[in-house]
Image 1 (cartoon, helix red, strand yellow):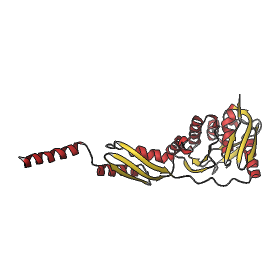
Image 2 (cartoon, each protein chain N blue to C red; image 1 turned 30 degrees about the horizontal axis):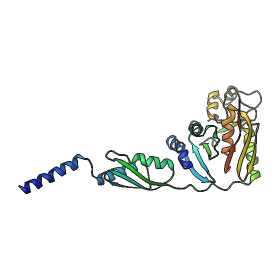
Image 3 (cartoon, each protein chain N blue to C red; image 1 turned 180 degrees about the vertical axis):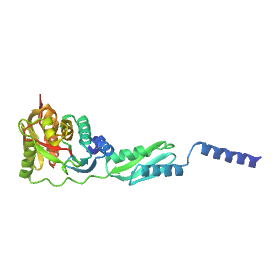
Image 4 (tube, each protein chain N blue to C red; image 1 turned 30 degrees about the vertical axis):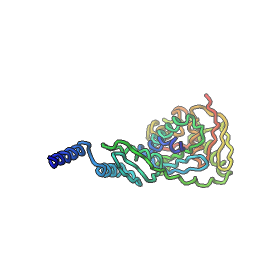
Length: 123
Length: 159
């Protein structure tokens, strides 16, 4: 079974959820470089990756997915000591949940943010 | 008598053929159209005795599966796939080791993945250390998104 066949469901999922990607393969490692339309789409791909290769130990896939528009036009905010998501949201007039959703890749628990983290502020 | 018999046989054969469904040529057209509808490109179809043979080179394994599934239109008894998958190009050469190491370390720090130590050997990142389980995915993502050629993941999941 080729590496592509091993991870084919990730590619199929990407086709379904609108993620564009390019493949590269060398030294037994498949590289999927792509752009997902949303954090959610990116997360789906990572969930599938975790299903095929629990805890990402095999070292035969490099999944490099960025989220479209994450950099462009969005503000970033650097977390300071004493901040929480509601407080940051209030500064921008948006809900804490909107910030949480936009930063699912770096925030695992909305009650735990760390000084120095750079949060994407959705427009 | 003989002529009557022949005429009857011809009629019977014609009826039989139509009862069996579409001819191979019709099926071939149907499969080709289905593939076009499903935006499968680079695949050539030939149908013989209801068996669709697919040849050509497709972009990746996902496209291969899709083509094989699309070819199963009504009347096709089986699909014989001779499709090949285009070999992906090699990854772009790794950035100079010190640059990659610094970049990964910086991104790990930004993501709050303290406790992970990395080494870079010929563009391949070897990561060790222990991170809380809740941070694990994020730390793995940071390293995979740094443009390394490979990743030896020895990070332990803490509680």
